[in-house]
Length: 459
RNA sequence: GGCGGUAUCGUCUAGGGGACUAGGACGGAGCCCUCUCAAGGCUCAAACACGGGUUCGAAUCCCGUUACCGCUACCA
Image 1: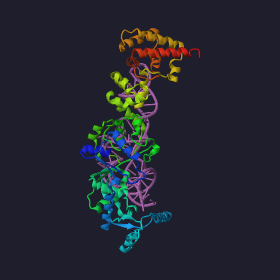
Image 2 (image 1 turned 90 degrees about the horizontal axis):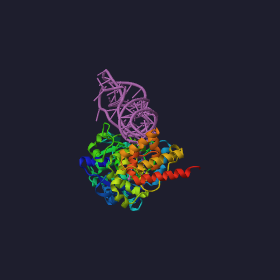
Image 3 (image 1 turned 120 degrees about the vertical axis):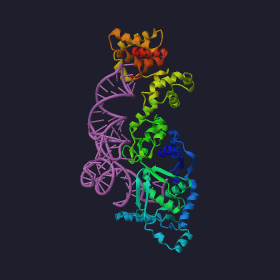
Image 4 (image 1 turned 30 degrees about the horizontal axis):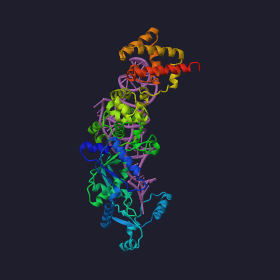
């Protein structure tokens, strides 16, 4: 996200690389989630996607180069030996660092063992000194090299370890800015040493904060949604998601919060990048989504909402297209009081011809007196039915004067009617409901309510 | 354990020596608007982790402590 904003802001390129050197963790499923997530959010990448595993030959060539230059060495220690040493060190409460025993092997020994087919890994020989860089978000960071062991760069099966592959690829792809999660800060000195050993100039490094779950830990499966695109099925708009995500770890300064993507681009600056991890707050995401729902014109919302409307059985592509203007005005009416797309669909039900269910609590509250309610509703129906034209001022006059005649507050008329029309106690203004529903359906809904009330009488 | 990073309301954050009785937003409480619910407007509760410095002056700079997070793999 921040990479993308940075690239778009400063006219750079946003390159996508799938780091799939770990077969166990990198599945079709996981890479697809990346593409879907980025696409959904509208974060487009430049050039072809690069798959790290395809750079195998180059990774091996770079390891070979380091070996030839004497900057790396073969290590014949087995995993079991290393594990034992590590366990010993921990039990003695010492910190374990590889003791470089294989670096002391004579060239002849190395030759002999390699020739005999002993398996080995390639380790990078960490030089003396300190490794430091000026991080774009953190400022100067330094690591004493003595704290870094001679790390493995090539496995015994000849495949590269992450730190080598990354540097090799970044050089190949001419990466100028490495912007990533700050969990990579401690990998950075290792990578810098590889850059230097390979004789290449360093890119800039920017370590951005991570996002944590409510428990303060790294976001993971147990926090709910596993992939960003899962929020699509939760009824979240991509514009809201991207806005919300951007605010986790970045601020444009001042009080700016609700923004469109292009505004974020122009406002983006690394100065606004946060150093602290952010906690994902679903409540705020939903609020943000409500804001974006209100701000987005119905015509733009329509393609996103329609599939859900159809799935809910309210209509088909054809029936909706046939009444497009009406449909858009319905969306316009509902979007302001919705937080997710699901809210819109739920509220849209009464405006379509299908059956509606009456909210139980609402019935108890608004239709407590069934005879009285029936009487009120049939009078309301008669007044509405005789209206010369179906417009808001006429309806309002008819219903308000009815309330006045009876000496009751307008709400005493509106609320039972609202329940009859929508089955709910909440809806847009009652005249908007009547108007949007249309005369025929509105009168029918009242008839259905009267039937319901009659059926219930005496029970 | 070692190393590194971070630390402002419950949460996201503004703040970069005096404008801070610390601002905004979400969430919470309440009021207004009002036919209901949203939206909107208003009000309230709510934070500079702690301790030392530096300075005339510190939320802001430095050092320690603590807490949290990360790395410490033939994971990425």
